[in-house]
Image (cartoon, rainbow, N blue to C red; front, side, top):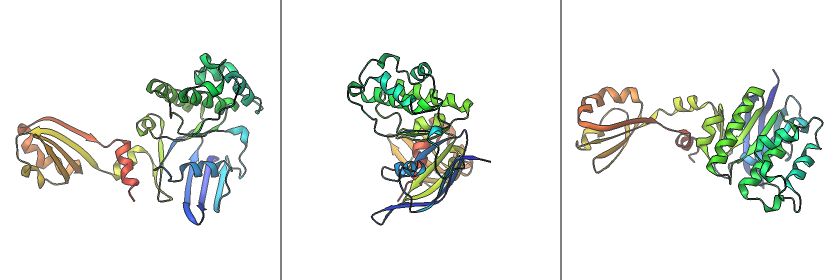
Length: 289
């Protein structure tokens, strides 16, 4: 099997300070993978290493089985959008298309990035969100098989972000591979099938959201009750209790162990809600120092 990305024992340090240590993973063609970590965790450094834009200290990287990435197969959208003075959007997009043997048709790029209304505007006059949309068109100009998106929706409004992720979902059918970083975990849940989490310069998690949930069984149980707090303190699996004006929020580490003992209080509680942690809360476990 040829993987889109293969990383083996990859390490990088700056000024003898480790940034990435012994990183190992493989990404199959067609996967949409989220790369997560705190600011400064090494996400952008990893993307630069994968694209051969930075020299590695140790380890190997292969893109579609090759040590040197084929630029015609790859698109990279960096955190900071590139601004070209006195260059119109349509000129920038066509310039990007000219670099590739088989570029995506111009009209398709315009529709994909929703930049029809921006074509005659100068790139240095665009807002942050508009620049991101233009950057996406430029990234997709070569019709890449592998796309790196580094904070792609920063600066976009909510409507534009939702539309962007819908477009990314559409590429699943085409087999395009994406590696994405974002400060909006709730958005990644809509598109990513797999998550890589970096903490303390190491890859600490590699798996699906369901696997992440299985490794963290904590759920939130909230309700209103006139009962005293002491009634719930010693229930099995309860790890934390907050109470405010008879409104309780319990953190429970294992719902199956908790529920049998809690059932006897059901006729004395109201507005009962039981919710599993979302991606943002699950991430916190893996990012603890």
